[in-house]
Structures are given as structure tokens and as C-alpha cells.
Image (cartoon, rainbow, N blue to C red; front, side):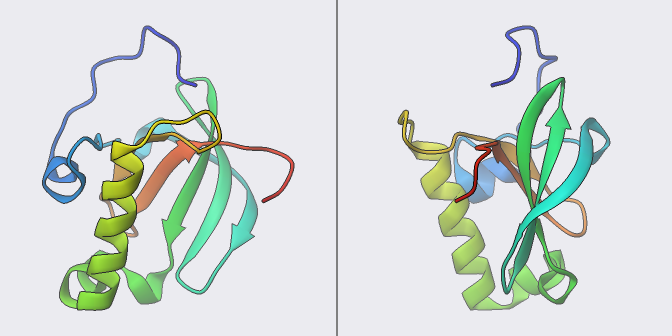
Length: 115
């Protein structure tokens, strides 16, 4: 989990989409290897303020413009953010924030060791 002394994050468009999600600057993310890939996104192991994180990057065919003009993608993306921003449990990954650059990215707690 991120250190206690993180600089303040700005709540921007993420607040409108996901309630409590925080907007993360893409410059604060350091990408490492791909740890997973699906039909709409790739997941990277990465570093955010000295903390190991998972960075889910939406694939180019599902870029930010498509997410907000294609209803199914918009609903799925919004639902994922809304759910992750509202739950906190030891057995579920924690949502740290969202990067609304193109392509958009969701930053969560990293769980090494597979699925």
C-alpha cells in the first residue's frame, strides 16, 4: 500500500465516474512487465510512489473516446471503478486511483503470485 506521506491527489473526473476514486497523474506511474492480458485491457506490474501496484491499461481499441461513446464499454468501465471505490476488504484488491490519459488506466494494489 502507498506510504502514509503521499502528496495530495486531485479528485477530478474520476470523482464523477467512480465516486471516491482519485485521479492519478500518468507521470507518477513506472511500468514494469505485463502480468495479464484480456480482451479489453493489459495489466502491468508497476511502481507508484515507491509502492508496487497493478496498472490495468485499456487497450487502444477501447480508448478513452470509445469508452465514453460506446455504452457497453462506458458502463463496464464505470461499474468497475464504482465498485472498487466503494469496497474495502482484506481479500479484495484496493483501488488507488484512475489515470484518465489515453489510454485510460486503473491503478490497484498488486497481488503477486497469479490470479
